[in-house]
Length: 116
Image (cartoon, rainbow, N blue to C red; front, side, top):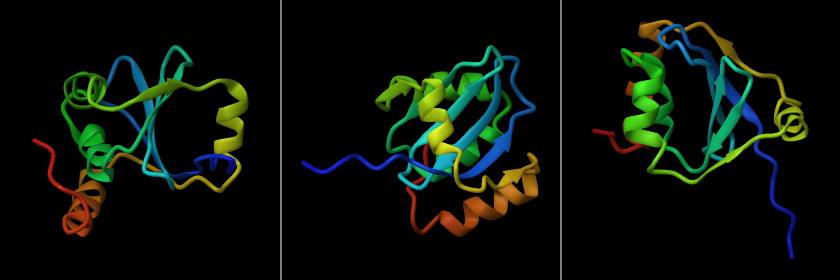
């Protein structure tokens, strides 16, 4: 039986468009990590990378999460040990800038289906 790989954060965005979410991150295993302002962190499994950018760019990250991610993907609440393991690689901290997000979405259009 093989040991399951611990996801590593490869990109993170500070969220300015939410009263509840402070950061979203994407992992090398195609998972979305959502950090809430109350300190909780959740990992949503196998989420398309485009959804990561669309959530950050949306009018409300919390509403996007509720409408497009929360009930569509398996998730788990992360404990402090798991969070520490995931953050052992250098995290690309990126400020939320629409032009950067738009460019990243354009680059990934051939790899990821659009989310309606």
